[in-house]
Length: 148
Image (cartoon, rainbow, N blue to C red; front, side, top):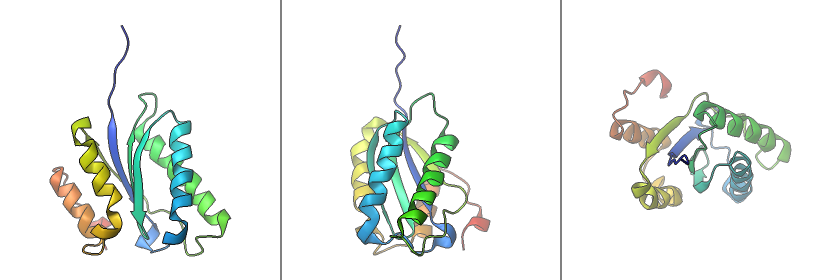
């Protein structure tokens, strides 16, 4: 018998100190770089987007890869790349930690649209407000030590 899986994650992580250092003019290059990392891990990227201080990734996760390793590898590789390109001069690194939420494939289109519209969404709310809502919706207890 074959193995079947559907592991769909929305992963969110921010820049160190929520610094607005991911300038929009070069974000597409960053997103393409992340897409390459994800593809090399035999995962599929459904959508990626973000604003100056954080990124959202909607991806499946190959069962041979642990979530923590997946996120660590993306953050480590992109941190090096961001600093080497010279196109993100204010980038100092990624903040510790991340948020990851699993979803049913039935929610995929809604999530794709949500991630696609980050620039519009963040005209009305901050990253911290958005993360609090996501954590609350998923029933995750919020630790205020990690919010400025």
